[in-house]
Image 1 (cartoon, rainbow, N blue to C red):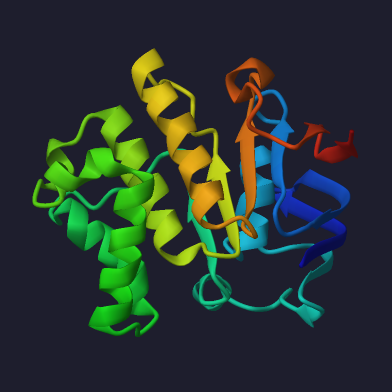
Image 2: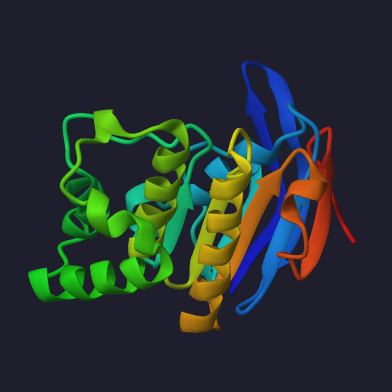
Length: 218
């Protein structure tokens, strides 16, 4: 599905990703573990088209995405939940969820169907749909960010350090949501980055390690 070939990324004159090559296959949940500054966020942002690569190639189903902008990658059914959530405070939760689908030109019926699926995965959000983004706690914001990524990420879903800062109950809710998601969309590839491997529990099928911008496929 998604293949990275010898990806190098420089930021502010420093090499952040070093010759990263990896394949992301359907139906797999992959945990990418590394300390802060190891390159986890840059890796996901590079896949999403938010960071320019120095050299290498990104291919999705054999199609070269290397120069494709981020919004067009999202249209390939790729969802991304950044570590800092980026919930729009003046919009309701439902408007935050609808936004990526509206940007892609999906119909109201298609968006309603995705909302229905999301609420099966994250039922805790149902009573929050009319709530302002500014009224969410940090943990609730992470759940909304997960749901928003699910709205478009029906083939590849990328979650950047989702468990950091979550209270134990919310961490359990998040884990249970991922389990429900995999039941509903068994072909989905999920990529989760974390600095603490213990936070991932038994969620991933595979654990990869990233250190100084290089990935070791365990």
